[in-house]
Amino acid sequence: MTQPLWTISEIIAATGGVCKGRMEAAITGVSIDTRTLQPGDLYVALHGVSQDGHKYVDAAFEAGAAAALVEDNSDVNGARCIRVPDTLKAMEDLGRAARARTNATVIAVTGSVGKTGTKEMLRLALSACGRTHAAEKSYNNHWGVPLTLARMPVDTEYGVFEIGMNHANEITPLTKMVQPDIAVITTIAPVHIGYLGSLEAIAHAKAEIFDGLAEGGTAVLNATAPHLDILEAAAMVRNATIRHFGASSAYARAENVTLENGVQCVDARMGNATQRIELAILGTHHVVNALAVLTACDAADVDLATAAMGLSNFAAQIGRGASERIDTPNGPIMLIDESYNANPASMGAAINVLAQTGAQDARRIAVLGDMLELGDDSEAMHAKLADPLIKAGISAVLTCGPHMANLRDALPEHMRGAYGATSDDLRDAMLEIIAPGDVIMIKGSLGSRMGPLVAALRSHFHGHTS
Image (cartoon, rainbow, N blue to C red):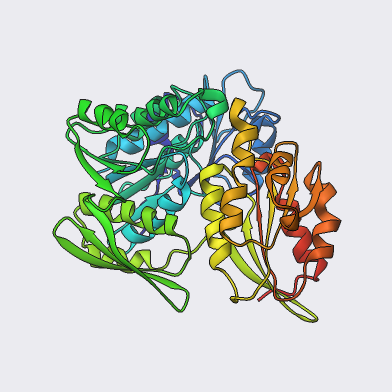
């Protein structure tokens, strides 16, 4: 019989809650959303920005919830309700209890770019080596981290957590909950610089991940990251073993990279050993992230050949570089969906992937929306994208948003495609320019709403994908 994730009595002990129901009831999962809740889950009624989860407690029970965490001052009643003063704090307490009871090796990932991809690579690599629990999607914030912890089974062998931030002092409380044995910082880049003001401040904010690192744990750092000294100093406070990746002199480095039938084959040097990696995805940034993953796996003392086999299953995610073929009556179009987010570093990486995708003589079209939260340097950062686009030989660049107007002005005239104030304004022009054989990449910050352009492209050709 499968061991339950929690019992009601365990939840009461962890949260200090009060319940009139059956103490022996088994909980098989934790949910904050009735739309994805599974029978047997504990439903946590959180206060959202626009919604109060207490309104959906009845719906949660109708969907099969075994119990619900609700607040003392709510008017929700029921024998299976566990009442607490604050449901978010109770979920945090449940997450801390999950961390306290596990013997798993726990890895936390942060960085300006590549967090989610690196977390997914780690999930795949470690799943090949043992029972692995990892965050869903980009569950890396003040509710995502404790939710992921609360969902961690007691027999987990490897736990993988993603930790994000927009401002200083946001990572510290999350990493102190996670208490990682190994902490990975993918890189430092001007993401959220509008809030933090400088790359140095971003480095200090990312270095907060070491505030929760186990004494004598391992810090996995990108050797080429700006302000590496800040990251190293923070890790040394915890007496960490520091392992660098990425540079030719680093502990983990790519000695040889070849492209074979769309697969990047990497000979990775790990200290004195060499490990072959195969990645069925383009982009040198994925190679660098894979080096971070192998370094973390090495620190976790797993078999690297087995981890590399798991890593070979990695594929780009929807909105984060996933590619698909869209069939049209006159031939296929290749779509690269990068619509989830954007910043100068990820834009450069996506442009390089676009340049490598498709037939040699294919037209390559970039559809770009604003990069947000870049502060006073936003105009210059957008304009500077012209250089990598030109060097990559991109055929046409369609732009939308007030910031992307700066890129349009910086491009040579023959590369300037249509411009729209919003993504909606660009829709018809994009659909008009696309032709069979084209490779089109759509990318922008989430707030620039590039996702609807991806959907429009699919629906225009009646969803004929393969």
